[in-house]
Amino acid sequence: MNKRMMTGVFFLAVALLMVGCATTQPMAPFSAQDLDGKVRSGDYIAKPDQFVVVFDASSSMGETYEGQLNNGHSKFAVAKDLVDRMNQTMPALPIQGAVTAFGLDPNVTKNPTVTVYGMTDYTEKGLADGMARISRPGGTTPMGMGLADAGDLLKDASGEVAVIVFSDGKENTYTTAALDAANGLKEQFGDRLCLHTVFVGNTEAGRKLMSDLATTSACGSATTADDLASADAMAAFVEKAFLKKAPAKPVAKPAPLPVPQPKISWILSGVNFDLNKAVVRPDAKEILKSDIKILRENPQIRVEVQGHTCDLGDANYNRMLSDKRAQAIKEYLVSQGVGADRLTARGYGEDRPRFPNDSEANRAKNRRVELVPMN
Image (cartoon, rainbow, N blue to C red; front, side, top):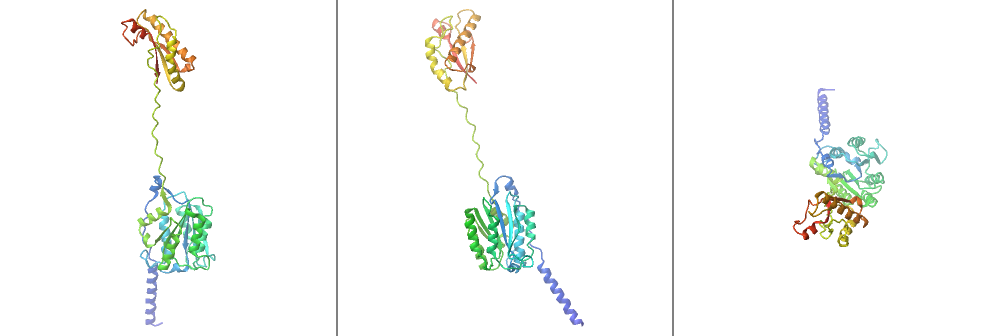
């Protein structure tokens, strides 16, 4: 080999090395927003009970992505990076997840679709390990079959479900068309389905198909790789797909106001006694009727039956006489159906005159019994 040829080979090798370096540039850095606080606070809860990521690993995804996010990398690499960003952003949620891929390289699998993760309890590591199994693109594009797989994975779901599709929107329709499959999911799950699409492609036709897929569900969304370039945008996407406001916490009812005790006669001015007597008079029984009715209807009320006298006679005698008067009224109330355990009889003698003991009329009023409600 002459010197000129050796020089040519050298520059060719350098050129190939430079091309190789250019295609292995690191992906754009990403620092995920922390959404865990929104869940821990109780303000947000999981929106779907189950979700499926449908990932396009067909040969067209091996083409270079011409958008702004990670420009120069393959659409396949950009799409995998987006799933990783979504996974990093997702808070810990009590939901189940799965990943199904379609169009893998035939050397990886002969199957048109393959489930690489779940259906299982979602964890960040579990989803990442599943995505690592999608090693390289290279097959055809049976997107409809990928969506049908999602329906099979979600068939036992009883609550809301989410399907997130990452694709360039190119498909072949030797099987069910993607739009027909999406409508099949809508028919299967009704309003419980939210279908979200992330367009990682270069053609307007692909963008339109991805948009049309999203519109098959009322709560779906269509976005693009470039739309999700920032951490804020990815956080907003994750919130829309995976979170919802928690139901309003019931407002604590104020403590009920205490039930007012029915008003009963504090002073039964007509329930008087003859001088030196402790016998319940007929007029007293008539007056007591209303109080007996209240006590029967309100068994929570307890009362002290208080006996009193005028100032005539010895103080000790009067105290004893007032006890007898109180006891006489208590026994009468019990005879009328008022529980004895609700009544306390006590005499106060001449110590608590209601009127001045300066006339016979006032002394007669002081020879009395009062019913006093007890707390």
